[in-house]
Image (cartoon, rainbow, N blue to C red):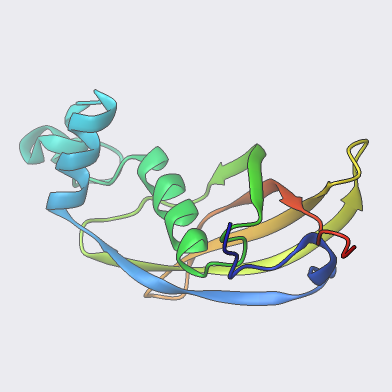
Length: 152
C-alpha cells in the first residue's frame, strides 16, 4: 500500500492546517437532496423559504459537514494511513447560504495511543469558515490513524 499521508507519529497537538475552498450553490444542494432524500422545502423551494427564519433557501446542515470532511480529505493528511473515522461532534452555527464559498481551518487537538498498538487516535478540530470570514460550522473529527510500521 502506498501512503502519502502522515503516520500517527507525525501528528502533534497544536498543528494547524488550512484546506482549499468549495462553493456551495444550487447544484450542490440539489445533488445532496437527491443523495440524502432530504427534500425539505427550506433547501429547495424559494417561495416557501422566503417565509422562513432565514428569508431564503439555505444549504442542508449535513451538506456542510459532508463538504468539511471532503475538504479535509483533499489535504491528504491521512492518505493511506487512515484506518477509520471513529466519531464526529459537530455544531451548526450559521446557515450556509447559496453562493457561499467555504474552507476548513484545522487544528490537531490531541493525539493518543489506543489499545491496538498499530494505530492511534488523532482528534482534529475543524472550523468551516465562509468567504465572509464567519465560522458557519465547527466540530471535531476523531480519526484512527496507522502507526509507522516497524522496520525489520
